[in-house]
Structure formats: structure tokens, C-alpha cells
Image 1: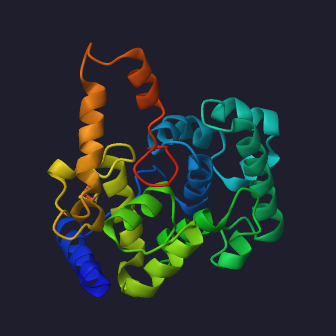
Image 2: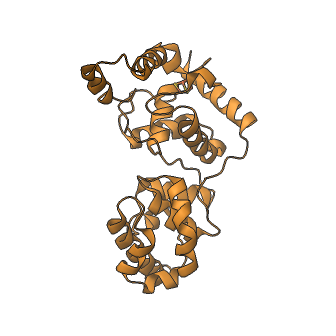
Length: 251
Ligand code: SF4
């Protein structure tokens, strides 16, 4: 199948079945989204949504967050991953927004990347969702699912995935494609055991058609058999790598 055809089938399917995908992070303004996205690195949206109501109640605007100590911010985010670093990032980000950007989240990608805790992925999420700028943020799900479906070829880094998706996806679908790939990776195309048996993309998924999916299914089925697994085999199963070379987390 030609790559062009695969992209068309991908866009056609999701445009029809998920025409309005949105982030699962809870927020009500650009400041809250920026905070939530910074916190969501290496953490689940579910966890972030559990802690942000109290955080936003205490710091309802960026000015309040800019006046807070790192220790106080930490006390609200202690249950997320890397809370020390993230508390420092939020404090620094808020101060910079107040002092250099008139307390507004800037629309320019280059300005966003100056903010502590904001890398390429976070900046892409913000320009795409808040400012409707054509961009696609690549996280672990986007990386893995785009690779498995065959939307990307030999893309070894998030930047390479981003460049290939930018090249082939219609501009107006970039923001949606980010959510399509994340949601598909979160609920269907799981890292360790993709649910190919219920996936509607098998007719154009490169990974499925290569037969690798069946191998993973067989392996996981064997690992799941009760009482027949020797200790040596169980130890080996524990070290089974995910089906691609992507990060093993399934957030
Ligand atoms: S067919 Fe399997 S590998 Fe392909 S996208 Fe669906 S779940 Fe993922």
C-alpha cells in the first residue's frame, strides 16, 4: 500500500468517527492548559486531572502562581511524576509569564520555548490547541502509533516523526491527528499488547499486516497461562520488551 493511500484511509476513518477530538486534560483557559501540559510529562492525564482542581483553586491566575514558593507549589503536585522539577518549572514559568509576557500565554512558538518546563512537545500542544496553529506534538503514543500504522518510516526520534506527519497530513487535520493518535494509543494500540482484535484500522495498519501483532498476541497469551509457567520463563516474560522501540510507558 502506498503511504499516500494509508494517510488517506487514516484521515478518512478518524474524520468520520472522531470529528472533534479533544485533550483529556481539564482546563478552562490557556494558563491552566499550560500548567496541565507541563505537569503531564511522563504522567497520566487522569492523575493530572485529580490534582489540578486544588492547584487552580489556590492559584487561579498566573500572578498568584508567580508569587508562590516552590515548596508550596510542590505541596499541591507531590503525587505527579518528578514533582520537584515540575514545581521549579511552574514557579519559573509563572514568573517569566508575568515579567516578560504581560501575564499572557504567548502565541509564538519561539516565546513558548523560552518558558521553564516548556519543550517542543508542550509548545506544539499550546500553539495547536490555544492558537489553532498547524502543529503536531509527538508524545509516546503518537510516536508508537504513527510508527505502527505506517504513517512514518524509519523515524527514530520524536522530531523525525513530527516532520513526517507534518509533511503528509493535511494542515487542517494536524491538531486533530495529535488527539486521534494519542487516544488510539491510550485505549486501543497499547504499548505492550495492542488490541488489534478490536481495532478498526487493521486493513491499513502496517504493523498488523506484517504479522508482528499476531506474534505479540501469542507471546502475551503464553505469559498469561496460569500455573504452567516455570519460574525461569516467568522471569523472561517480565523482561519482554514492548513491541516497538518506543518508551514502555502507557499513559
Ligand atoms: S491494528 Fe493493532 S498495531 Fe495496528 S493500529 Fe490497530 S491496535 Fe495498533
